[in-house]
Length: 218
Image 1 (cartoon, helix red, strand yellow):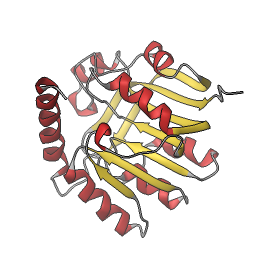
Image 2: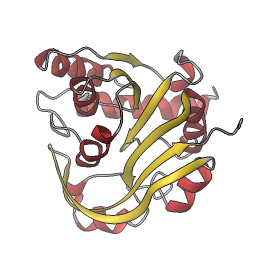
Image 3: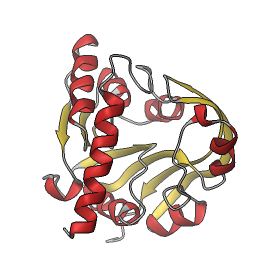
């Protein structure tokens, strides 16, 4: 890892540890609405939650019977996630570190849920392509994150949250490029109203994507 990348990672780690160190859950304890809508449509199996923060979505999946793995760069997020899991009487596997440091296996997961997983611009596409390797053939990606059009919404109302760097935000074209070998079940850019904890409140623009990984060996 270059010095520049390491410094950027450290800045992000400090930022998220600071946000998750408060007693209150930054984005609430309830799962994201899109995940709540999509995940019950699938048969249970093994699922990965990248950039999972305080664990609200991982705990929801565990309560449905999924075997849950998660990771984040924030130890404070992990601590909150374990508290939430204990409160809900479920178990999750939660690792702290950058993706390159973690030992996930090829085709380990039946589903991967990317819920507001806004990685730095210089690694986000590389991470998406890495996640593809961890997903089984016919596995499902569930994705919701802020679109590039969201910049005008967060500029007008900071309470809606989300990055202010357009290169960290997403477009439909980026999702199509990052997940080329997928059957698109749903892919849209839409405006929604968020009411998630302290930091997602108001109207924003998001990309929503559900895709099934094609078996390219057939």
